[in-house]
Amino acid sequence: MREGSKVKWLFFALVLALFGGNVLYQWMLNQPSYLLIVIGHHSWETSVWFALIMLALTVFLIWFGLWLLRGGFRGIGNQLQKVFVGAEVRGQRQTAAGLIYFIEGNWRQALRLLTRSAPVSSAPLVNYLGAARSAYELGDEQQANSMLAKAEEENPNAGLAVALTQARMQLLAKKYEQCAATLERARKLSPKHPVVLDLLRQVLEQLQDWQGLEKILPQLKRQNVVDEHELERLSRLVYIRQLQQAGQQDFSADAIESAWQKVPKNWRQSPEVVLIYVKLLEAEKAAINAESTLRKVLQKQWNSQLVLYYGLLKGADVQRQLLTAEGWLKERPGNAELLLTLGRLCMRNQLWGKARDYFESSLKIQGSPEAFAEMARLLAHLGEHKRSTEYYQQGLLLTADHLPDLPMPEVRNG
Image (tube, rainbow, N blue to C red):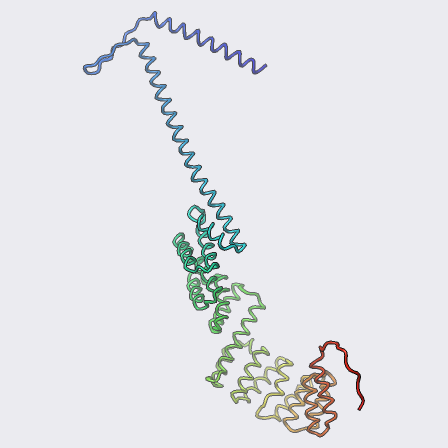
């Protein structure tokens, strides 16, 4: 019903317009009019109604022409927009695909797509950095450097990102000196950047630059670059290596002492660091200082490894060493390592019977290969060869207690 009603009204309006137009035309014919237009030496004569019709037609044609031009320009603009927007969309798709290839390690495809889409990418810096790494992985270092240069040209404020990318490539190539120089440049841009510090840590360790590594240890801790376990490992490594460098043949006991004084107080109680220092002193004929250091550390912090070395240390006063160790025995009467140390100190003082008693006591508590060997050696020199052989065999079995279960020949008598 509604559609039919619309058709009827449209037909009625059309009929009314035709009828009205005919009436208006007849009326215009019966109304005389005259219009004269003079411009210079030229004149035009017409009726007013014709002039009005021509004016209306002219206005319509002008409007229609403007409408066509506006539509044409709009169409051209839409087409151009489609071209440019389409290129940008394609660039984004290629960039995304290139990054996926980059993550997958498909360096050739990543390089091709990231390089091609860089000019129309919304973030060309990412394209150039990814392309640089891809080119480097393909062995084209020249193109990698070219991509890095373009990245820096694209965004002059991206010096840190460019330096980090270059440093990672140099680290992979084991060009540690160049990598260290690049990271120093990056540190000037961002002194506290965690990634810069972490890469610098790796490079300095490879270069064995222990002084340089020591300088950045506080920053590694403050910026939480490494966990506590790794920081402890690095600190121990730094101070041990510095002590060992000071103990080389070209150095003296004074150089060792100077290196020891640079070690933080908390690390002077570390058994591993103390043991390195004591061994260096002993090698430099400074056994008195070595014994004194070892004694003071053991009085504050008991350590089995240091106790055993105290018995091996060739001090200037072996009697004092024995008395000191016997004083420790009052507090630790059942310590197997201390009893072994006491036996060795008795040997140095030529107290054979006392040494034998200490070795036997140590073996009763904990049979160690060292205690068996010391007991066997002492008994051999005392003429008890049979018992000495038995102790040697027991010690040997301890060192080879993980032998596989294999068939054996029957024991032969005689």
